[in-house]
Image 1 (tube, rainbow, N blue to C red):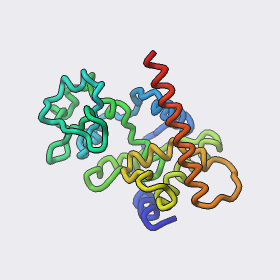
Image 2 (cartoon, helix red, strand yellow):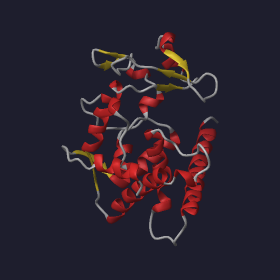
Image 3 (cartoon, rainbow, N blue to C red):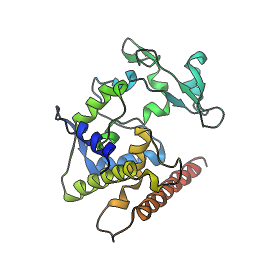
Image 4 (cartoon, rainbow, N blue to C red):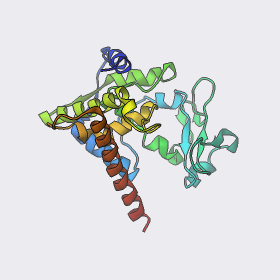
Length: 234
């Protein structure tokens, strides 16, 4: 394991109060389905709202017209690298989302899809942290999540997700330029998409062969998502 992933794991290993995250395989299956259908996540947040106060830039798609109608245009700017019409909403200097009023989301019923599908358990699943000191409170929450493993297959699935994340971090040089995400959220999501590459026994493969298998698994997953989106439009 390379130095950066060793460092990440060492930070992660600190023990904290446990919060039940659910059966791992059930959560993984549901989360992958939500990623394809782009439905809202169901997270046991309780009173936690640290994702709303952690200096996140929120992506809002052009088709989210009801959401956009609730946000002051001065708070929005074009999303770099995305097609015209995709916007980002910034945050205050203290990291808080401008839609937070009296510590609650003032547009909750119309909140962006980015917020609806956010689930910080993806970081716990991939065994990585959400970011730097700006995400310190989320990192604390990540360390608190505790999945359950009713069967050996649950542990095997979790190990496969962690192995996928570690390989992608440690072997970025095996992938085409700019194809490996550096954003923690995108990295964790990619690990969830391609974990099957590391599931079960497989013949010995070189690192480039594993990287190729990861890219192919991601393409298959994205094909399912695109197909579902096209079908749902009719």
